[in-house]
Figure (tube, one colour):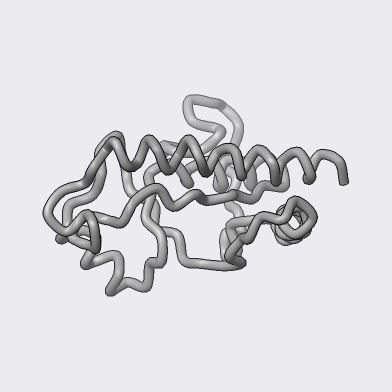
Length: 138
C-alpha cells in the first residue's frame, strides 16, 4: 500500500485518515487574526488556496484553470504541511503573503519580474514578523 505524502511514509504504522474539510485550525487562525489587529497589520480573512508543485511558477494556462476552479491564491508552499500537521494532531494555520500577480495577470501578463517578488517579500516578511511577535505575546 502506498503512503506517499503522509507522515507515515516508509513506516510500519498504519496510514492515518484525516478530516481535511477545513485544512487550517480555527483557533490558530483566530489568534493570527487578533495578532494582526493588535500589530496594526491588515489581514484578509479567508481565501481559497490552490497548491501547486514547485519548484517552478505556474503557467498562464494553469492559472486560468485554477481560477476557474475557484482559487483566490496560488502557491507551492502551502501543502503538504497542513495535512502532515493534521495527521500528527498539531494545530496549524498559515499566513499567506501575496508576492506577485500570477502568470498572465496584471504586471505578470507577459512575464514575471523576479526583482519585484524579492522586494515585495522583503517588505512583507517584516509585517509577518510583526504579527508573529504579537501572536507570541498573546
